[in-house]
Image (cartoon, rainbow, N blue to C red; front, side, top):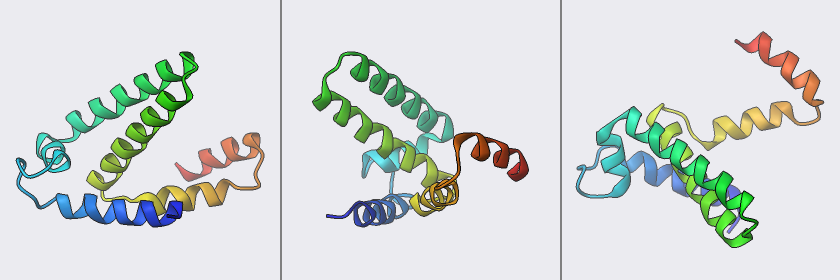
Length: 109
């Protein structure tokens, strides 16, 4: 399955879970707990990703990055955003040097 297909399907599921009962799914329970709980999960998964990378275990690193991406997508959905918003930003940056991109960010905010 293509990356974009996975992201689109996952975004649709995450959106559908917003209206679900908290006890019906893990994602619905995260939404019910609110932003702080979602942010905590993103932070935990980011830390676990760093630890996996330092441990030089590629299988564990892939697993942890998948968790990080998943919880980041939950965060985006909670905020009314989706993977296309991030992909659009990456496309905007494509072809810019890192220095140019950093300078352009000050124009956005």
